[in-house]
Image (cartoon, rainbow, N blue to C red; front, side):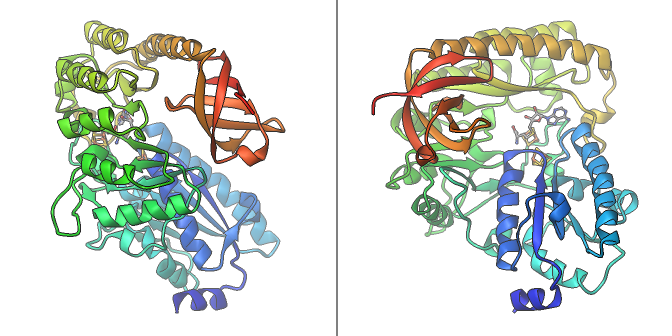
Length: 456
Ligand code: SAH
Ligand code: SF4
Ligand code: F3S
């Protein structure tokens, strides 16, 4: 009904463009939003300028991320005005975490926005678009935390290529004192086991050989099975491991205190579970971890890492770090560097602490000066890069299975990933795209490897 109505009402609306900011969950959400739009008769535009509908899927995690949305929106409004001069209408929508946190700011700072939907209400896009076609000029904003699950209203998920994301859990109850996510994504919810298995089988049937299970706190997964019994992530991984044609499983992002023995056993038992784990630690200082309201100490983190390495000695770790959290002294920072030396992370993301209004840490005394934050970030990143480079260099000469799924910048080049999430560039025909190929590594930099196909 809606579909027909939409198309007949809006003959000028045809092409969409989605710009995605933020984490993998936003990439996944954008993929699903694109599917909604395609059921409504839209097709992807090659550039913003050609789009009749532009959607920004936004991130609120750090101040810079949120501010970028507003400056990009300003630029988008200029394009909207240019198009208007040519007689073309442009609908502008904002979705994602900035909407949830700053709905009033959007109405004030970007009144030309036509609609804004939070991360849990984007399934209402068809109704919203139908309403917009009747009424313009005031942003239509929906930031409810709805009773219904959006997953029950979305068109079925489709493969993203060789490697697909599958959201199994959303929201977070941890309330780390610096973080906006519990406010933007709401409390933790888990999707039912059978819905996930069905979605995974469909993705594999459509050509995905790798599935990356997503959740803000993915290892606190506690979805119901068909008998209404709550199951954990380990149960889900074991079920997914049985799907024929699925070669690789990953999950992200994990919370260290929620890594249980069942999950550790999966890293020992499940061959499809890749030997790479993103396990954010944030800081190596117990004092800072406590102030951050993390439910793990430095010692407990190292213990979990040890247990996981025992279960699978090939496992490589990546992590997230925040430097310059309120009250962080040189000694606290030194403990973070020391933890990095102990774990030898093979990849990592590190950030300067960003003060987020509404979070407890924003009001803490002893905020660290910007200059010190900058200095600490450089020192930490230098150290992290040295381990990353060492790991990549050690890969040279080895033969590794690489899943290729992106075309490189040069003609005839494909980009893929090793089991350890290292990027690999190789000269390969496009028939190898979305396939796992054995590659002999010939060179390495901090960010990637290059290699050649092994055998025929
Ligand atoms: N769900 C993920 C976190 C998403 S945010 C998890 O729990 O790991 C990704 C990373 O951004 C966090 O791990 C943290 O390192 C960083 N981050 C979050 N809030 C931040 C802030 N206020 N300032 C700087 N970095 C922050
Ligand atoms: Fe944010 Fe902490 Fe939850 Fe991660 S665990 S999303 S950092 S509150
Ligand atoms: Fe950003 Fe929201 Fe993800 S704040 S990091 S897009 S959960």
